[in-house]
Length: 292
Image (cartoon, rainbow, N blue to C red; front, side, top):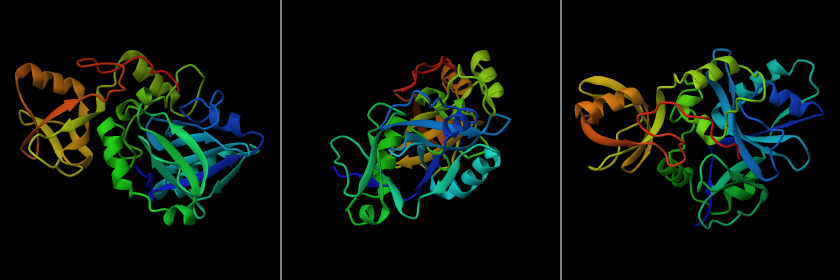
């Protein structure tokens, strides 16, 4: 299987003598133990603990880090990083004009023009990512992003702007804590107090799950999920009969106990936690997942 060209992803380079301290103090993830050719999910939060931006952070061969992030939100991401930069000896660059991102899974080969290949550690089986020359990727005959979306949806891996809105979701709600994107033992970062309290008090009731429809194509993103006429959550991105859905797990458990079906657009669905989740129904929060 060829790799897929992820046209909606961009690349930021963060470099300089203070780069590690700078990122360690603002991101949800730890980077001081990150190995070469390994990408780790991390987020930049608001002081209220909600995700403003996220991306896969990977050590750059020339030093510093490359960030594989959503292209549509990249300019604002850079502005926010610049805001926090202050006097830190850090250089921030948007490389998206010349560099692009591709994803490969199963037996996919590295595309021509690849400059850096790295493991996507958000979920087992998700595969590898490639940063390379945009012009070369465009001519490499790669699959389009829909093929990768189907793969990640089947594995229960959400993406910002598709399955949750930036500025409106906590890391636990997006399964970031289960995908190695949040740590609780590295000290303070922006929004850390709220996220830590949610984690240790077990108040993360909303989670992204995999929703399956036995009667055909899943409804569109944004469709409400209900049980007994009460709102349970809403659907995100979908591929065929499978979708991601952000649901209140306690309401799902209540519906199951009452024998009420989950419905989206009047159609029944089944909800299951992604295979990488370290907890099960009816639990709503879990201990920290292993950091890749």
